[in-house]
Picture (cartoon, chains in turn yellow, brown):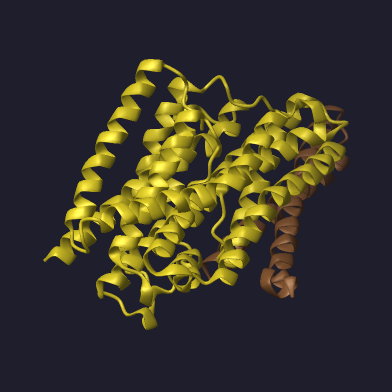
Length: 365
Length: 78
């Protein structure tokens, strides 16, 4: 009974995390298409939400990486997963509050890794797999998106440079609508799978799934897809009302190329099961498309913040996850600790949202 | 040693496929856009043959880029 209640708490925390992931990332997915007026805000957000939902169904390789590749499923407990999720949510909230462009994905992996370290030590984590599937792609992917977008925009401008701008803009409009769809699909497939992986880890810990026959149940796929799509939709309306005018100015060709580069890198990485920071990849694509046109047009301060987020997120979320586990463990191995932490977390979340609302500052995407 | 830990071969494939799909689709679609613009200009100047050739090039480019997108999704789902 206690174990069942604990599983329900863990699944709820994972779905809240998934919702906040979609909520957080909407701006990145739709910003370019709204900025270039390829799509109206309403259409962009609706397409992003729908294709995030669809994207969650097209692959399970990233879920397998999270669920059975990085962590030793046999050594994990529901409390570890819970502590990892709370650590990730805490780090996400803290960075959201101060405006650091943090990666939800790295926070999730860092949080669970930290809780695992606190619970069973290093033996619960496959260190080589962590470097191979998380750290190396984390460094590579944004740089790759920058290069793909940069090379693409140079070629595109060479091809269309002598044509009349009005006709060219009309031509790129449908292209950017398609690239917005592809980016939304890519975002949904990579990000929703992380939650699927974590919920499946909890199911293994609960004993509902054998660690030797790892698979993601259909209800996990559907609930994760729904949570990220709902978060994307709700987050989209927040973006339209608060940061609609702060998004980067770019032309239709740049928007098309930036989003296409982001989608290409995310989908190629998803194919090999790499859980990426989609935020950082999309930022890399936008900067690449901007830098190739005019180097000084790029906000290099944002690039500095991304590098800081790269370095900080995994260890900081790990510390938060470990601290949450230690705190939970004070109340024993039952459901009491997670229940109390959940109440505390809801209180902290409400407090942060109220403070944010009072300060009337636009939320960083 | 480092290459083995990092799985350099798989990372290289990610780089290659990202470049091929990202740059390739953008270039082919841009070729379609420039062809469509060429078609509009040619028909305005009553150069029918040139306009038809530009139209064919635009249609082929559009079809190629859409095919690449659909193939990409099929590969991912597979």
